[in-house]
Image 1 (cartoon, helix red, strand yellow):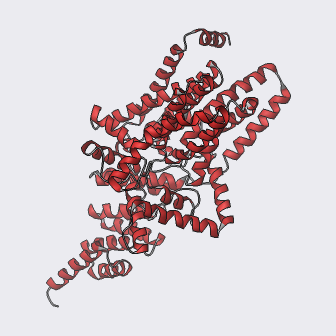
Image 2: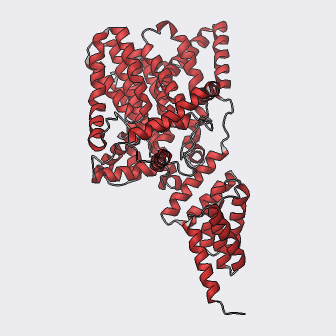
Image 3: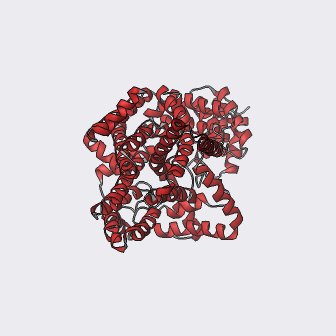
Length: 574
């Protein structure tokens, strides 16, 4: 206890840059240690889904900086990645080390924001919480824009804190500029722009709107001009709004992401399918704005026709936003947990389901200062609402993490003071609050097995495309261990086994796939190929016919049937 008091006294006396430097070193070291622990895993070496697309996009940016089409997804992260590649070479490990440094800087900025809103000690505590926050370490290790989301949200909080303390309008411009950058990594952050503008106008007068909006326009304006120049339409970020709105609000939606077509979940495939389906429906070519309007109209039509179903879905998504479960995208945290003891320890100590109850205590403890903290409240509520409007991923709610860490630091301080002062009645009320929040954030809304299986499957697909067939097969088997009914993993593993000459086992895999989906033409084709290689021509013919009947345009089935016909013609007459 004496050592803690001495540390607290030093934190009060020392120049603030000294503990901030220590915080940066601590956060950066944790992230680098985590990267070292996962560096040998297939998940580290083979970026999947959006990460694969970002890597390709970053390489394309190096050859053509402006590009030739309207942005479909928020562009800042691939340009950030392209800058790393230009400086350090195309090294995915070094790219992640840079992300570790950016994540550590986010902790420093959050500490500065906490100092402005609360105190030096609480600011540093918030920075330490973010530094040791398990999901933040996980995000450092994947090629996704979440690290930038955390950085820009922390920077926005820092700017908002300075606005509260300093009347100079430069901080309003800074806040607008940072919010613009956040919108270029997380498009739904655009919804915060009018919310914060109204708050500044209410809090400090209409004269504050101009510098705030100027900052945002300095970032978003050039992107809108670029989109207009290459595509004739001035999207301020990207053209994905309509598709995202539909994906989150339709008759089949459950709050999580389901691609427009099965197995095509990367944003490059999603864009292709969104355009193709819309143009096929209307019978002519569409501009990006028209494609977005097509999908948003479908979403709005469903919402207006089924208002109660929409409200029920919205309530479910609101609960998902606050749930402890980190809903994965292509990368599932659970597979990384098995690779890193550091990630397991930090995740166990401090997950989203821990952050929220502590933050709730902090909100209650600081409620008397709600006018001064109004911008932080709006950032929390606005980020949560904008995530619930579309679909819920762990990375989509990343802007919630820094402001929640601020309130969690205040909550920890409040709990410590209550226990030290032995205020039993207050302690009981806070304990009940924490218990209720823990229960609510841990309501089992989703099963984890499917996402873990999908993570192994995605890595298998990437490794197979890179020619690492053996490692790909191992990951397909891991996917089936997590979910024995995973149809596509059966199909792909069967194809690899057939290619390796293990025809009997390949047929077993395709049989299992067809038990899950009897209309899988690809499974019929692979089964037929294995039979053909085994000399069982009549049985192969049955499956080729079945495949072509299900999908007349499946070229692999038609090619196999042609080979079979050629073999029969060469056979001598009996």
